[in-house]
Length: 251
Length: 251
Image 1: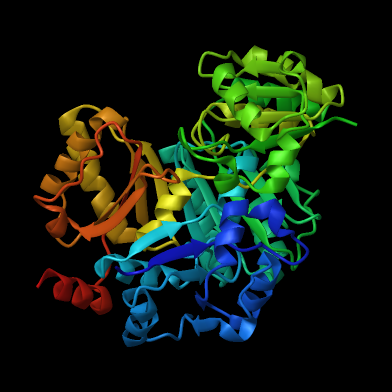
Image 2: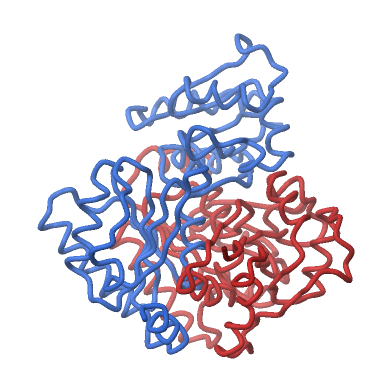
């Protein structure tokens, strides 16, 4: 019998306690495993310490899977599973295989008939969507926007149109030191009635989640420079309740 | 000071233990709240019992927010928050405000400057995405597909084209008693090399997650009739590692 590949979520940043972001069963399971695949062994070891693992750190086998891992090497990462051992896949932050190289390993595991079990944990994408108050019946995560300014502005226009046409919430991220630039471009580019949720430092003590219309954000942009932030944009069909509420608040 | 609106995830089905799906801190927090908004008070009370709440059930104020709730009523649901009390928003299953009416309340809370705190918990959408092994850098959740057959088939074709054109993973659901029909339509409509992950009974003891190409699924469709299932579709650009792996498995 091959082992099981467990997808184990980790904290979204320093200072977050495991009891706030990981169910007890997942923590206990992680504390019993001996073989892990992660992007950065150092962060993975820090996480394992937090689980209170009973396994001595020198007995733990830690393999690396990052953007430099060649496809041929993936096979060897699966070998312990084929030998009957359970393996934990860890991400650098949050849920493995969502916006990291882990997905390729998961796909190959399916092809080898290895059981894949995703565990519950924090996803900044999903927490931002929940916290935004936008349409959760239809949403898209787009990853990073283009770094080059004119391309980024074109992309923002596309996203806004897409949201309106499909009635779809649009979620995206930016390298933290470019957050302010992106915010300025969003406010300069989007229509006043387009809504934007800015979700910063999710699950951390400094967490801030705020949804406003672009018109309301103008001149009052928060400082999220160098803080991990998820941007959620929604161009909603006319909705009187929210419009009325917003109008009242402005007085 | 207004209270905080906590978005509290619940189990994805019966027989799931809270310690498997909810971080300890979230469980403890839910156990201290006295005021809740939920879709179905009965399910909400069952959940609260599981948290081991110290508050007597008759002291708990439980308001209903469902598709019949009128916009004017939303204001009264926020009143306890404006009076300084913390309130828990519960979904019928999984994360509130993702595919349920809770989002309207969250949006109004932002307009009233009420702090919104989403807690970590199970999302069948995100667990299916993690478990699929597909592209997690770009994905879309589309909700339910059309119930009428010719419209549904047209939609499947659109989804497949969309996935290829945008290199975007496509996630959708169906009313459980229509799962088999949808599966048959997917297999009959999509190209053989399009990949499909079928994720059934997520987080439950009967959980099954399997990713195969449409060609591989043909004639071997699983039985997920009446079981909650998430469908994840991906038409990938040529990827030798997976193709080779799949070819080897077929022998």
